Amino acid sequence: MAQEKKKNGFASAIGFILAAAGSAVGLGNLWAFPYKVSANGGAAFVLVYIASILLIGLIAMIAEILLGKRSQANTVTAFKKIHPKIGWIGVAMIAIPFLITCYYSVLGGWTLRYAVNSFATGDNANALSFSSFTSNAFKPVLFTFLFLALTAIIIKSGVKSGIEKASKVLMPTLFLILVAITIFCLCLGEGVTKGLNYYLNPNFAELGFDGVLAAMSQAFYSLSLGMGIMVCYGSYTGNQMNLGKSAVMISVFDTIIALLCGLAIFSALGALDPDSLTKAQGPSLLFVILPKIFQEMGGIGTIVSFLFFAMVAIAALTSVISLVEVSAQFAIQKFKLNRIKATLTVCLVCFLLSIPVTWSVGGAFDGAISVFGFDLLTFLDEMTNTVLMPLGAMGSCIAMGWLLDKKITANPMKTLETLREEGLSLGKLEKVYVVMLKYVTPLIIFFMDIMGIITKIRVNPSYWWIIGASLFLIGLAVAVYFLFLKNTETGTNADEQIDNAKEQE
Image (cartoon, rainbow, N blue to C red; front, side, top):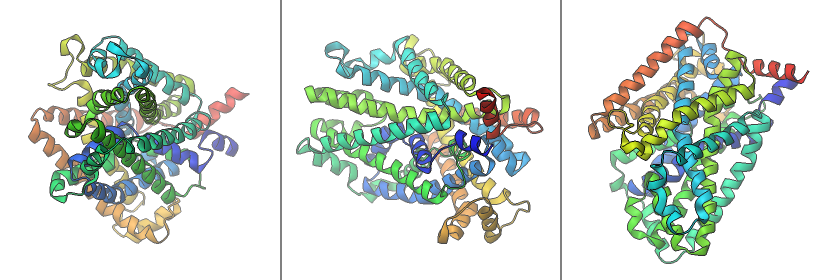
């Protein structure tokens, strides 16, 4: 059985780090981070972002990885092993990435289309066809299907042979492409300086409270916290992995990718389209502004466009792989499905649910598909990112900081002893980590979540519908757990290993 365990999990620490980094590095790094930096004081935003990584990201990440590592199981079982009454948090952590997959795969399909279409000219060129493409009732659905098909092909091969192997190829490829594009964009001419000044000039006056909140939120979301991914991937690790070192490397890699994206994007904008600097945000940055810039580069722009969108597609793919794996892992372990059936089932259901999302965000059928004034992508994104993910991460911190001991205690040293027994090894920082885990980080996350919600409501009162839907989902997770899962076996990684052994006989 020991051999099966090694075979089913990550074969190496670097494999885990690259897979987890692949989950963290996504579309948010490529369009959200650069814009937020430029709009909130440049380097001042980056400093708060890095501080938030230390105060929120690393603390919660280590807690989630350790939660998975100690359980060697899916998110439901992981929380259940901490305390039988909090297993519903694991149910919510399966629902969150599932919902995210339903809209993130749509964006992933767009990246595939733009990579393939980089060599088009005239009326079919990227910059001229974004609106017509997204509003088409068929083409975006096709590319979403192709994107999820690529995801399924990788996941069905398993953790070691699928996710780890793919991550070892895709992540270095992404990094090399990004470095090449960044160097190229930095050499575009005099306007580069204008773009970099706009991007990185430290201006604390422009940072403000909203900028601080945005930096905290970006650090949190960027590391894939609160959605079960780190719990899932942590369950596939062995005792040889250094938790602290791995978490730091994941955070550093994620931050470097985000900063390089900003350097490349704003260098290009400053040199070739300075008027768009203040408009460089969201999908319009990736799918409208940048394609126009690539066209202006002439022949070399075609190659740059292909490499850039190939890189974006890789970032989206590695993120969706981790999102789907959370649901697939639970399906395998709870319902004793083999990996191929579980993967195909999850991907098929996500694809079917992504179709109305595709039509909604693209405005097909004259924008008839919406929810309380929001397109479905925005509605699901706000539900998961603004409301649910912070609650999930806070639950992980509370579970590991307060509920791991049989006797709940406020004594940090008692908690430290328990965490050490579970595999925590952070050297001189262990005491600091425990204090952060128990007190500081949960309070920061709670503050960030509440203030983020208040800000959204002030801008748009209809946001109450999103909060209501989020609370309904939490209530549904509680009901499903206590009615169907609390008193039944919810499986562990060993169940898949046993199933694999039977298939090999």
